[in-house]
Length: 448
Image 1 (cartoon, rainbow, N blue to C red):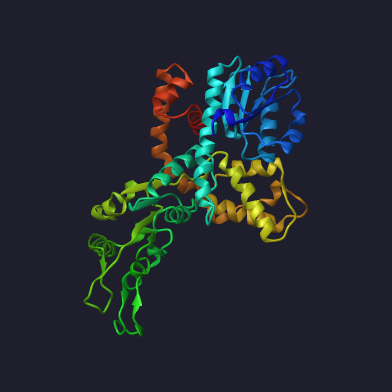
Image 2: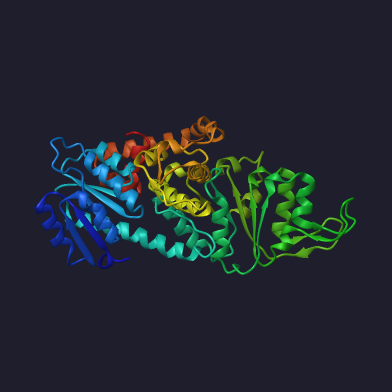
C-alpha cells in the first residue's frame, strides 16, 4: 500500500495540532479525518476503516500521565484490532513509550514532531500491512496464518522466498507455535501444491516402526506383513514430506534417513530393490540449533541435508499485538462452531491475556479461548471466564531457564549501544539494525 492510498484518522483536543496534521496529510493520503473529541471514536470507526489512527495521549487532563491515550488505544484495539495506532504526546518519557508499545501501539512520537519522521512512520506501517496482506492472500485458501507483528513479518518474508523453491526447510520453534501450519503453508505455496503433503511424527515412532512406516515393506517381511505397503516416502512422491519432531530420533535412525536423502531411494523391508523417490523435505523440531549442533545427539551431515534454510517461529510472548488479533480470531471461530451469540471482549479479559506468559504458545491460547466461549454466559467475555491450563504453567520455570543466556547477551548489547549513543533511540536502533518500534519492544521485554 502506498501513502497516497492510506486512510488516516487524527484524534487530538488541540485545534492547532489538528490543523497542522490535516494540512500535512491531506495532499499525501487518500483520506484524512480529524476529530477533537475521543468520545466520537467508536462512531467514526463503525462507519469507516482506517489504516492508521494518530492519537493524542492527554485530553484536557490536569495530570499528563498518558492514561487517557492508553485507555483509548485499548478501545481502538477492541473495536478494530487490525488498526495501527501512532501515539503522540508533548511529554516524552521512555517508560511511557514502552508502556504504549506494550499495549499495542505501532509507534510513539513526541510533540513537536518532525513531519518527515511522522510520514516515515506511517509509510513503514503501510509497508508492513502490504507485505502481510499480499502473503496471507496466498495462504487463505486452506490455511490462515494470523500475524502483523514484526517477528511474524520476518517469517512471512522468508516464507515467500523459500516456498516456491525445492529447498529443504527446517522449521524451529517451541511447542504450540504453529510449526505444522507453517509446513503446510510452504507446501501450498510451492510448485508441488497439487501433489501429496504427507506428515509423519517421527519422534513418536519406535525403532521397528521407523523403517516400516517411512520406507514401506513387502508381504511377508515380518509377522503381520500380510500385503505390500508403501512407506511415507513413496506416498509423498512428487510432493512434500513433513517430518515432525526430527530432533527426537536416534542416531541409528538418523543414519538410515541420511542414506535415503543422499540417494533419493528407499528400499522397502523384505525387498532388495530400491525405489526412486522425488520429495521436497520439511522438518520441524522444538530443539534449538545449538542442541542440534551436538554431535552426540544429532549427526552434523544430516543437519546439513535437512537445513538448507531454517525458519524460526517466534513464541507468542514475542509477538506483541498478534495476541489481540488471535484472540478475536479464535473467539469468532468458536462462537460460530458452538452456535453462540457474538461476544464482546471486556478490557480486563484482554488485560489478563496480555499478562499471561503463554508457555504453550498459540495452542494454549486457542484451547483457553475455546473453553471460555463454551463456559461463558451472556454476550461479554470477562476476565473470570478465562482459565489457563495448569499443565502449561508447570513449564514456565523451564521456559525462563531456556532463554536466560540468549536474553542476557541481547540485553547487554542493547545497553552498550544505547549508552554509546547517549540514550538516542533512533541512532541506537539504526546501529542494532532494527526499527525504533522493535527496540522499544526489547526495552520493554528487559524492563530497561
